[in-house]
Amino acid sequence: MNTLIIGMLTAQAAGGQNPIIGLLPILAFFLVFYLILIVPQKKQRKRHQEMLNQLNPGDKVLTNAGLYGTIVKIEDEKVVLRIADGVKIEYLKSMIAGLATDPKTGEELQKQ
Image (cartoon, rainbow, N blue to C red):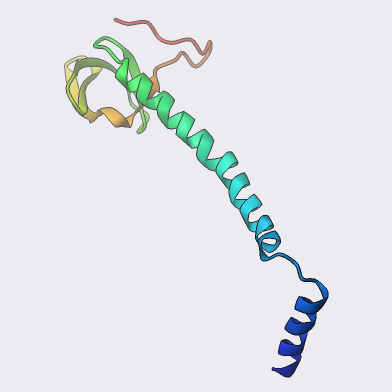
């Protein structure tokens, strides 16, 4: 206990260092964390929301579950997808991963 107090007193007397300088590594860590993780996630979320807003009936899409389907009808928060002849399902609009692309060429599949 005495050595701790003596150590603190000598550090204060010798260094006289500003306590803000001790916080700089922590602030730098949070800045890097923000720039590496949070900013790209915001950009990705914004692009996804823009894609969802531009969907139209007839677009071929891929869902987060891996289903390919064609949009038949768009409502507020859900879409009706045709996944096979005579098979339609209701799906949350936010669960659409993106427009369907051809795995060989990477180009978007054409509307039906």
